[in-house]
Structure formats: C-alpha cells, structure tokens
Length: 165
Image (tube, rainbow, N blue to C red; front, side, top):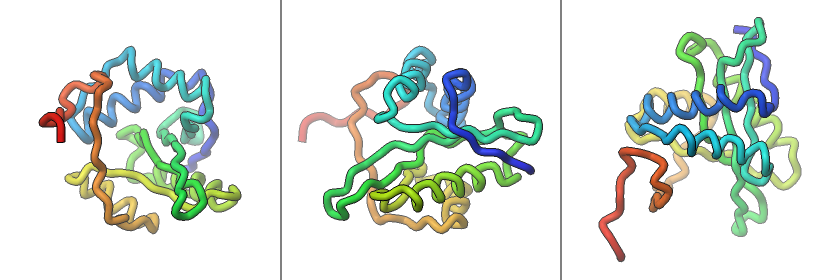
C-alpha cells in the first residue's frame, strides 16, 4: 500500500478519538469514556508538550492509521525518549505496511532530532502479534514492567489497586 505520513491536524480529531477507542477495546477490552478521550486528543493539539500525533493516509488521501508520541526525560542518559502510543491501523489497512510507515517516519525524526536518544512503547503482554511487529522494527524488550495507579476514572474495566503500600 502506498502510504503517506503527515502531522495530524485538529480536523483529524474525531478520527484520532475513534481510533483510540477502537484500539483500547480491541487490545485491552477497555471502553474509554468518549468525552474524556475527545478532550484528551484536543489537549495534544492545544499543548504540544503533551505529545504529537501522526496520521497515515492511503493513496486516495483517506486516513488509515495513527500514532502519537509523548516525551520522557532520562537523567541517566541526559536525553529524551519518545514514547510511541495510541497506535491504531484501520482493519482493512492492516498487514499492508501502514504501521511500518508510521514507525519508520517517527524513527527517522527521532534519529534526526538532537537530544532524542531512543523510542519506547508499551504493549499488552498478551498481544503477541503486536510484539512480533515491534520486534521486526528492531525494538526489544527493555526489561521493565509498567506499574500504574489510574485515578482518572476514564477507563471502564481498568484494574484498581489493593490500597496503600
């Protein structure tokens, strides 16, 4: 598939929100609160410090995939990691190079941006297909587990902690 990657625009807001909703339901069986996700997507456009979205378009100019990066400072390495998040490819466009085009675009940007020292992402532990895709792109298990406390209330079905330490 001939794919063009571009920076997302505010006019992509609904596509991005729906992609995030579909990804969460498909990969983690989580239903995102529609109003919250739409405010969250809008916040990225309002404040670039929150992240940056990219959209993949097919030859006809239709959006077929998305990816967002967020930023993490590493004092250990004196540089910034870009976290790949909110990845979604429309079902009809899968296995046709859309994710690879998104990944290669971001990887090239990262390698050419001073101070960016690498890419990271987290993947659902049972999502074997996604892990294999990321490995084919050259990513490896970083040896960390992600721990969290989610106090947002925005994700139905999210695990809740057992209480204080």
